[in-house]
Length: 115
Image (tube, rainbow, N blue to C red; front, side, top):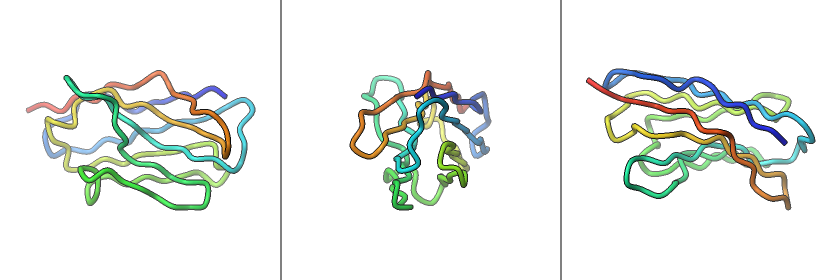
């Protein structure tokens, strides 16, 4: 499976960005897809995850500001981010894991929140 992420960039404080990720190759319909991030000086952490059963889990910092969504074909995942803060600056990684499989990571897309 290959993951292609897009949508990062520079945004002002309080602005919005939409990240998108498409999985290609041997994509299983029952999968988890989501987003992790690595901010300066920190370990990679979960942002939001959409489970194979339709669940959605968010990190505490993402609740009420970020929304994860999936395409009908279950091979795409989007992350709508609003109310962005400087501490949201970092590299955002798309994540895929088929049920019972190993995680696959995208190449990362940089999000910079600045005044």
